[in-house]
Length: 539
Figure 1 (cartoon, rainbow, N blue to C red):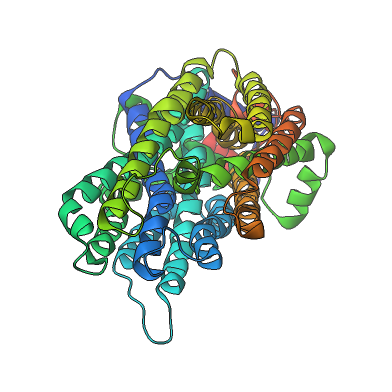
Figure 2: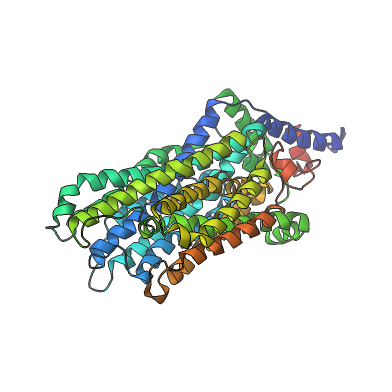
């Protein structure tokens, strides 16, 4: 280092120190021991997914109730109305995932985290208090609010995934992200449990049927409204969670503040903004349109984005095609029917009660065990083997369910076998691509595009959900025979599971690798001082 004209000229050693400091700070996160902070991140992010799943999948039984109340006592809404109610949320998801995914990379994870939860709370509350008018049907009102609900839920996907991945140490990252996503299973179960409790509480009014479906109208509003409780509990923690050090370092370009944040995490201290550190900025690759095109214009990077997007698209064709129609499928195969005379209060009560019980059986029989099987093996087997296995098993299961559907529906034992295969499909969706498609996009991209790329991948999945729901609605009533083509729907699901096997080839194995290794960018010399004075201050 030398002096010239009263100014210090910084040697290249300072540039090296700055780059090494960044890598050393990141290594502290990657090698950190499991702590209470990781538990907090898991709980705060997980509660959002609990709420998301509760709100998304409760519509399966709520749609049946809406049919009773607003479609002259039928067990479902009209085809178009039922489609609108069920497809509104996935459409909102698609918008929310793209929008919040991009905003989280531009404005920061912290600034966006909590806003999407406010959207969920507001739209859920509004949905529970909805009423129709002379110029607007009830289903029209619900479609609007469920679309807005979907926007909030969609925003939760990239934010929760990226925040949990960027705070996690390398050796436990898969398990931490799986634990966050596994709250989806508990939310699905909770919606079924709340449904059965509410239905039982109003049994007498439903059976006696003296109030023209007033009791059922109250029940669906209760089921829907209760979904805001966990979201309200989590809101404070969402708003006070710190910014991830990786965003502070690589996007906000503040190495010193990020290093202090990491120290605070490891020492369990409160976060604060160091004004002196905030004045020292670095130069790092910036997220611009041209940089995005240059990065993903390379096959090695584009194939990863295409692989995560198509895998999620293929998976959600079946996952939401089944999940949003569970009540209808259970009724169709006689697993959730009633022996009481059709049109009576007892028949309505039995149908709703048995559908709720059937949903609990499916949750315990496949959904929840699948998540936790992934939790046990994600960091030892790896992501790709689990996704390969899941898609392969689902392909075979849907082939058997589709081509054997007619034979299984002829006997009671055959119907039970169908339900067993349905549970098995739920198991391998979650011990397979439903979990890994959430995890891999949160790991496999550079920090400046991680949330955006996750949002693109997740939105591709919701596009699959919309296509599945539209196809389900159109095929299920052909020839005037409800669900006559359910076997062909299952065969179509098998085809898309097969395509998922091939898209899995394109994604990297992320087990045991740091997020920087997975970015496909050289980390040596990745950042440098904005000017010589900054370099001197940092040194």
